Amino acid sequence: MLSHDAKPAQEVGRERGRGAHKGQQTRAAILEAALSLASQMGIEGLSIGALAEVTGMSKSGVFAHFGSREELQISVIREYHARFADEVFLPAIREPRGLPRLRALFTRWVDKVATEIDSGCIYISGAVEFDDRPGPVRDALVEMVRTWHGALDRAIRLSVDVGHLRPDTDPMQMLFEIHGLILSLHHDARFLRSSGAVDRAHKAFERVIQFYAVDPAKAPVGAVAINAAKVEGERSSSTPL
Image: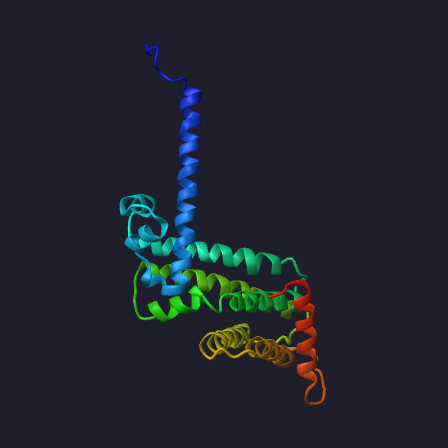
């Protein structure tokens, strides 16, 4: 028998639902702060204590949502990956298969790096931090980067399938070259503060495309830069930095 003071089951359910929703909001707020810290201090700079200070919570309150520093670091990597997918991958795959999609993936990747000049890319900084440190955090970071590389690899292979790139194109080699452009962009824009790094990245990408294209343009010197400028103009009109 329930006492007269007992709450109806529906009311108890609603209270639990509100509590769960509040918990999700708190976790999201902690992750937001953790992403900001990681972009400035690196993944290794994350700690329960640092987040407690930034968010104004107690250490036990932060700990209740993540359980350990390692779990916190992995959660930040996964959150960054989810946002990267929303901003770069998902919009780009709406483009037609072939070079339009591959260009969109690269363009949005450049846009992402450009917006992170002052904060830093977690994929790149994380690789420096954990390149020789085995463990779950490194494994999570490697998994996310390989997932992104897999998407680029498929875009390159589709470009071959639809006839935009030569049949003898080596997708892994082309991916290596494209990723190298991003690393150079990040280095020159963030470390050297080179104002022309974004334009150079786009021009270099067009040279890569021209090399692997089925019918490379037999254009005079300087034509590649003109084509790159055209792509840059189309990009900036639809997706401003």
